[in-house]
Image (cartoon, rainbow, N blue to C red; front, side, top):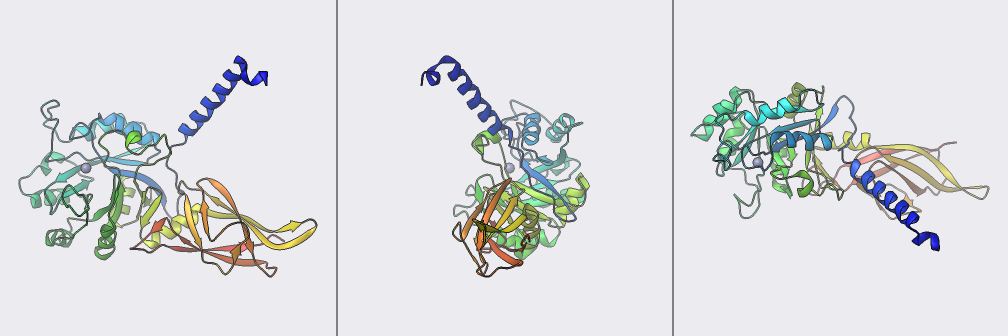
Length: 377
Ligand code: ZN
C-alpha cells in the first residue's frame, strides 16, 4: 500500500476532501416548490442591524439573504430601543431600509420597509411592514404608533409572543389589549416561531383569531453562527404564497394569511396551505411490481421524489404494510425514495395515505395526504 502513503495520494485525497467540503457548503439556498396558483416566496421578515441592536451593517443582511436563496426580507429595527445610538447616531429611522434597498438594487431580492414597535407586554414587540416613514412611528403612546402604521398601510404582527424576556413561563397569552388591536385592524399576524423558539399557544391564537402565521430569524448576529448553516441548519422563514412575485404580491398574501412557517425542519401553518405545499413537494415518479428471477412478485416498488428542502417524516396510514421499512418513513430533501409495498393481491392501482409528522396545523394535529399509485403494466 505504498501508493496510499505517497505524497501524490495525500494531495489527491486532500483535493477530494476539499471538493466535498465546498460542495457541501454550496447548497444552502432554501428551496420549496410553487403550489397551484401561487409562487412560493421565501421570506425572513424580522431582522436587525447596527441601526438598532444588531451587530452588522444592512448590506450583510442582504448578502446573507441572497446566499440563503430568500426572495423577501425586512430589516425591522427597534423604534424604541437604540443601544448603538451613541456610536452610530442617526436621526433618520428609515436609514437601515434605505441602505439595504440601495445595496439590493439590480439584485433578485425584495426589501420591505419595516420597523419593530418595542413595548412592554402587552402589546409587547410587533413588526410593522410596508410602512413609508418609520420616523412617524416614534410616538409616546403605543396606540398612536399602531394607528400611524395602519395609516401607512402596514401589515402588523406580534413578535415572539412566548418570549421569556417578557413572560417567564414562555406561554403566549392574548390580552384584552391584543384583542382590541385585532378588533381595530391594528394586528394582523403572529410569529409562531422566532429564532430558536416555538410558540404552540401562538398557533392556537392564530387559528382562533384568524391571524397570519409567521416564522422569522430575528437575527442580530450572523445567520451562519446562530443557525449552523455550514452544519446543515436553516434559519426560520415564512413561506409566502403570492399571486405575483412582487412586494404587492407579498403584501396581498400576508393580509390574506397565505403562509407556512418553516422552523427546524417543521412546517407550521393552516392545513389548507400545508397540504398543497406537501403535495407539490412529493411526486410519485413510477411504480412497478418487483421481479424475483423471472417471476413477478406482489411487492410494488413505489418511487417517490421529494422536491423540497424539508425532510418529510411520514407515518403510514395506508391499508398496506411495507416490505423494506417500518411504518415511519423519512423522505429526504431533493432525493428519491423507494417504498416496497405488500399489496397481497396484484393491483393496477391503489392509494397510499400518510400522516406528515413534521408538519403541524394545530396542537398535536398533523396533515394527512393521499397518493394515487398507478402500477406500470
Ligand atoms: Zn426583533
